[in-house]
Each structure stands twice: as structure tokens, then as C-alpha cells.
Image (cartoon, rainbow, N blue to C red):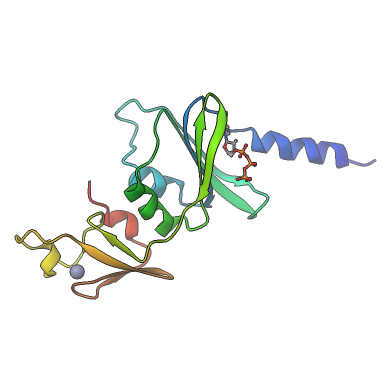
Length: 162
Ligand code: CTP
Ligand code: ZN
């Protein structure tokens, strides 16, 4: 009569759907729907042969659903983590070596990001010919260009300098 047992096993199967990595970075607890933006921020489009696993809308203890991105053989730069924090504010960065998690930290939203996003305003001083580094203030729900005040919320991934 009871299907309790199946229920528990089912949950564990979901957690194991994306296989473990041997060394690299696991970006966990990404907001559901943001995995492709995480790939964009990391410059991953599949063309350079990097081994990457993505789970979308997998069950999570902390949220109803989460995305997860596993990058084999790579650790992230602080700039990459800073930008990730804007679209995945609850993400956990796990550094894996020899199949073990050797470091785990939550992303922290910086007050300012410099030189990693470009302002979408073509008239902005930061997008002109003069070499002015871009500078965005981080808001609760987006970023604001420190030069022209343009506010960007949902389109942050499209501002990433490549
Ligand atoms: N992971 C992985 N490959 C490994 C080790 C861990 O892909 N060799 C993944 C796990 O599947 C998990 C994440 O890295 O999604 C973090 O691993 P771990 O700290 O062992 O899991 P939890 O304790 O559940 O993490 P948290 O407490 O942050 O939710
Ligand atoms: Zn601007």
C-alpha cells in the first residue's frame, strides 16, 4: 500500500542524475532557469572541448528546484564568481580535487563590478573610444552603470565582456 520507500529512492536518484567530477568546480544551488546564463558567464559554449555537465530544475533541499553546473578541470576566477553572484545569488562554489570537495563557499555579491560588464548605452562614456573601464553598482535586483545610471535587471548576461 505505502509507496514511501520508492519516494525516498526516487529523491536520491534525482540527486545523482549529474555524475561526480574528478577535479574542477561544481556551481551548486543556482536558481532554476539560470544554468545557461552561468555557462555564458563562464564563456562555455561547447566549442573548446571543456567537459561540462548541467542539471536543470533538479530537486533541491534548499529550494524547490535548482540548476547545477559542473566544470571538469577548471577553477573559477574571482571576476567570474562576482558576475555569477549577480544571477545566482545563492550559489555555492565547490572546488573538487581527486573527487573530494576541498573548498566550499557561497558567492558574495560585490558592491561594484569593474571591467566585466559593458554598458548597453551606446552614448555612455564607458562605451566610447576613450579607454574607460566599465563600472556598475550592484543593486538588490540588478546593476546600475556608475557613469550614465542605466539600470539592467534581467539582461545582465548579455552585458558580459568576452
Ligand atoms: N560533487 C561532484 N563531484 C564530486 C564531489 C561533489 O559533482 N567529486 C557535487 C555534489 O554532487 C554536490 C556538490 O558537488 O552537488 C557539493 O558536494 P557536497 O559538498 O558533497 O554535497 P552537499 O553536502 O549536499 O552540499 P551542500 O551542503 O552545499 O548542499
Ligand atoms: Zn553607462
